[in-house]
Image 1: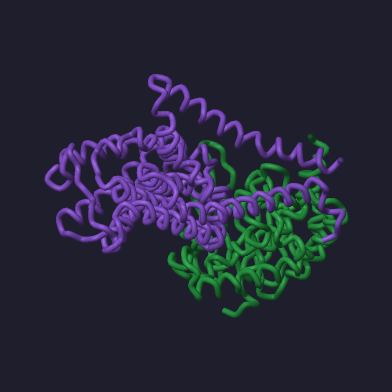
Image 2 (image 1 turned 180 degrees about the vertical axis):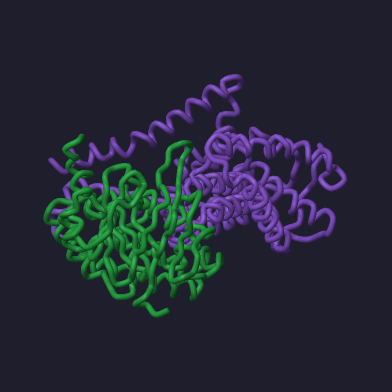
Length: 328
Length: 258
């Protein structure tokens, strides 16, 4: 291809994209050792909060994956998280099974629930699908309370079995969700490079073209809901493990809304830094603002606005600054 | 039936949306080894016919078959697996995929590694990916686009995006190639290159059908041309016969009665 074909602007946008990907990799590379060493330097309450933050970051990834690969928004993902959390809790309480066994079960249960929801709703999209997912979130607390023989009702269940015997449970409640988050991020990065991931992206942007090249729309919808449901179930399982308990108050409609908020403030990113930003909005920001009394909702909204505006205008601003730097 | 006799036929195709009749009992026959043109004014039903052939639309009447095997009732994906592929009137590339990844989508139906390969670096998935990438690069190279492989579609001018679509269509070695206005948005030099490219793509076992408004391209490359108006075939024949057909001249230039 001759040089004349590519304009300066096109070269710059390509450069910007590569720089963005490279910078996120650098940030992720810097964050991982910090997160590994952090429990050596911070108090137990922070390691507990960060463990919960990692679990919520996985939930944010579940919503972001649905948006990125399915082009759809969910306001009901707390349902799938609850499926994962209660799978772990019930298997431990009833059968004495540790996380090493209950986590795969939770994953499969989440995937199956995602598929079971996606099949009848495969022709719905946009606001109609979003409202359908809301039905799941609204139903879940009632299901949990009414199935109290299994779920413990309002009181919930405890999750106390360590994954690896002999290592302090507090440390495990930090590191296990962190490892799970890293694994989910890795798997999602693999998905982007895979034939299935490419098919999902084409089906989202041009369904007719995807159809014409052998990717059925129904397959795409069911697949991404299954994947997203599975990731959300891992999130729920990790949340149960990190917080040591499950109860219906954790998996409400508002939990789903906050998962969506986390996804939006991370700009639907599927990288580790973006997932952590989303998870922090569910866990750390409320904790930091907890001393602000009645101002908490106002300050929370303000922080959210600042992050969204910074994310939206930040790249343009840095591009302008970059060009000024080049001129000098 | 050998490849020389491969034929895509549509008989009595009737398609309507509400009270509007788009195709009215259309009969067409596209043969392997030929490049067939499909021309007519805007709204004549050319793209609608493509949509019927690929399964995007379900006609209310008529039947479609390829190599004597009926395609009726098959989904677009199933028709694609039988080698019926197309390009689109408006470029339909995924903006998030690179050029080579978009072209690799033209091969996706031929590979079957499972979901585990999508999430983990398993040998089979990596091998398939490597094969797809090599084939896609080769298809891009045949259209002079190898250097654009790792760019995003938005970084290419519209004419080159159309070529990427053609690369995606041909990479899977289709039996039927339906090109919907491949020269739209191309300048004269690019159209000349495209004409040569399409000649190179044509082969004895390929059914190639082109919907196009650029008459120079159609007349220079097509062996046969169907002229469609108001969802009906006006005439069919070699370019010279079509060029001098009075009905065709009337459709394009208007008759003295108009």
